[in-house]
Image 1: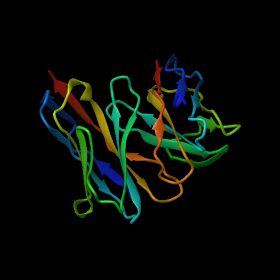
Image 2: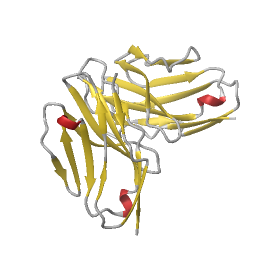
Image 3: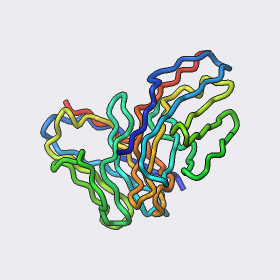
Image 4: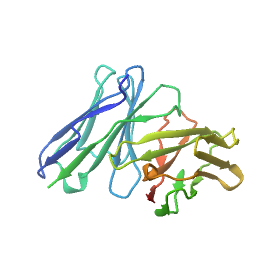
Length: 114
Length: 115
């Protein structure tokens, strides 16, 4: 297995535009997590899925953010009406369903909002 | 509330020196899990170790070792005979034993190993 993959790796957009990121987890993993990491900080939890169900959302996830995992495989994270404060690295991770199993991370999508 | 503190923002050492990265955590849970991840300049977080709260045995993996002490709520990471390739940001993270499993990360320690 090739691990967690994310696309695109880099995205530059203008304020007010919508962007969508994709994450493909390790194939046998049931859980998929999204994190956001700003410069000089550790990753912060945004949301997670168990199979296709979105089970938890952080208060960091404003109404402009939406995530889906329609068939329990890949996931998308969409940001509508982007703001400069959305500039960050968006990280995806996957794990087995048992709580506190090790999460394996993808390479991230670096977003820059101009 | 859960919290992870990595007080060392940056550390610089010369190759072959030993270096210890500190991690202090806070949690009210009796069951929890601690992790260390490495983030090289490429950006991808690489898993290093997972330890549960009931296992206080220290662990050694090659040049890496981890010291878990519940009495001081610390989970420190030592690199012996550091190498330039060890240069990266290292994150300590905490997860509770509940059903959610999301990780609480510290702010990271940037390690620079100079030749």
